[in-house]
Length: 92
Image 1 (spheres, rainbow, N blue to C red):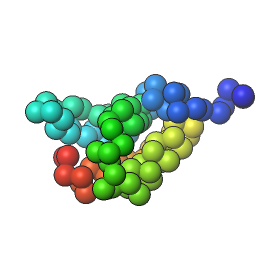
Image 2: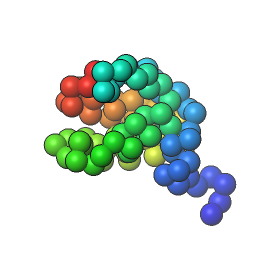
Image 3: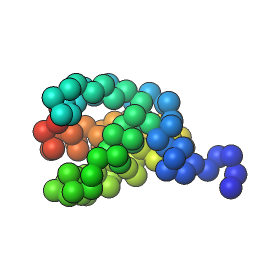
Image 4: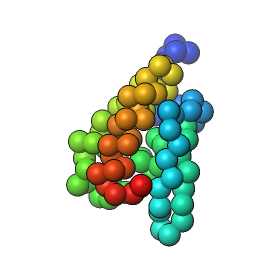
């Protein structure tokens, strides 16, 4: 694998900042999400059942976050995809 290729693990550790910081409520606590890696970990570590209702938005957010981990220019699309998912899921 070339150094320019990323895996899902790399996306979860990516420190590229998003275009916005999201503050979401999870189990009564506010979680701040400001990087590609934090967002990727947040939406992939929760049970897939929790995202089932929003599957297409969830899949799009994962795709965009993985793309942003490879190319920081894609953070706008990743931020927009996350915003759409979080608004629809009413976690913002």
